Image 1 (tube, protein in one colour):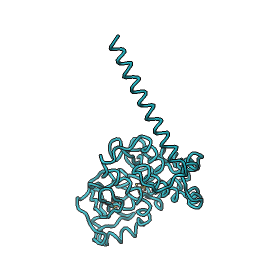
Image 2: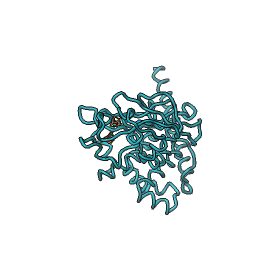
Image 3: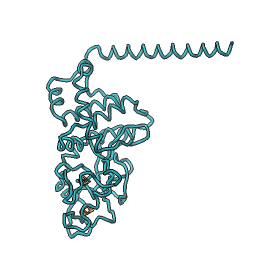
Image 4: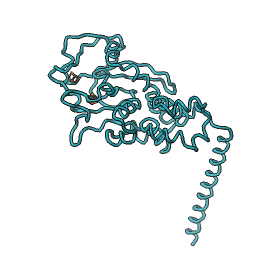
Length: 296
Ligand code: SF4
Ligand code: SF4
């Protein structure tokens, strides 16, 4: 089972018929337990996880996000030196999903977005520097998948409804938009700093660590968030995730999505000026010592 790749899609890789379809297009497909290829797709995985996928799975497994990331995922970069994503880590020395059993998926009710969509792929596209995106769909046809030969026709929209992807799409929209905007902004905005890349990773994938960060004195003293929003965010993983997407719009693109407390901006500017002055001093000190070395 693989993700879809089409130019401008936020999700990398795979064998896709390079054609986009609207949601009312009809497909021929059915997957069921009695089919000869049962579990074939889960035996060779390449699945990118959305932030909401991780929340659902780590809560299902009753573990924290840090443990989930360590045990079940591997990171990758969407582009070199840019923001990262995470994929499922297959079984040791193999390619199968860790949640595959002879009976099928052991986390079926909380299976990730890519598993729900297969063999359809969501392709979000956006214009440069905009957040509004438009969705089309791609069809993945892999030889081992016999579901395409089953005598059932339905629209892509009906298939999405059957697979319960609407909520998953809604919850991943902010994350997809951040990735698309970062990808399409390219050189105009530049590479994200290491700090902002780390923050993106924590916000999007390590939600339990992000909660500690938001609850910390440093964060509380810097950001002006209403008590109601803060309580919601601290007590609900998905609210915290959505709050995090807003924070990342500010960090990556300088948008004022979450206000700063009075005086914080002045403090930051003064700190930045001090840093620049120190850098300049350091640079002229090393220039003069280079000069001394030459004179000697
Ligand atoms: S999570 Fe479930 S459906 Fe998805 S690859 Fe693993 S076993 Fe298959
Ligand atoms: S029909 Fe396709 S999706 Fe269903 S089990 Fe077979 S390979 Fe997987």
